[in-house]
Length: 155
Image 1 (cartoon, rainbow, N blue to C red):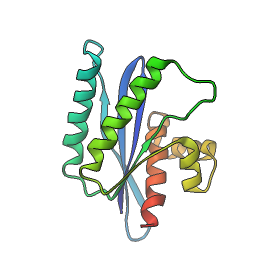
Image 2 (spheres, rainbow, N blue to C red; image 1 turned 90 degrees about the horizontal axis):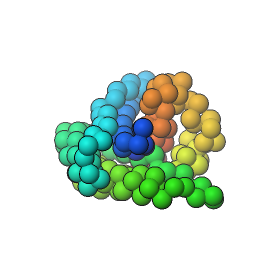
Image 3 (cartoon, one colour; image 1 turned 90 degrees about the vertical axis):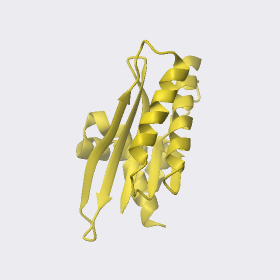
């Protein structure tokens, strides 16, 4: 089974998309590889940044055989967030979700709490597991990939 975990975050005010691919063989062994890391250019306007993300994700997804993709959705804070952060992140998540769905049959946006539930753990436990397996830079995409693997097992 091949699945993708995707993170859409902000890095020094720039949009960052990371796609981590997990491949499980018949014995249950899991291999992983980062298949995309796209950081936007600060000199571009917001619409151009989203268009470039869409183009890179589309080019990456066109040849995949992944059956499930999970996009690590932004957690909702009861205290709110800065509107500019929320808007940028939601726009990026939407572009990525729509682009992935053109090729991958099961695509879901999942919050940290939902990912924890998918994996039978808490959000913090899944984060620690992902950090240990894939490293700090791939933690968010790793969390999504671990959830995608669990979702794929249920199909």
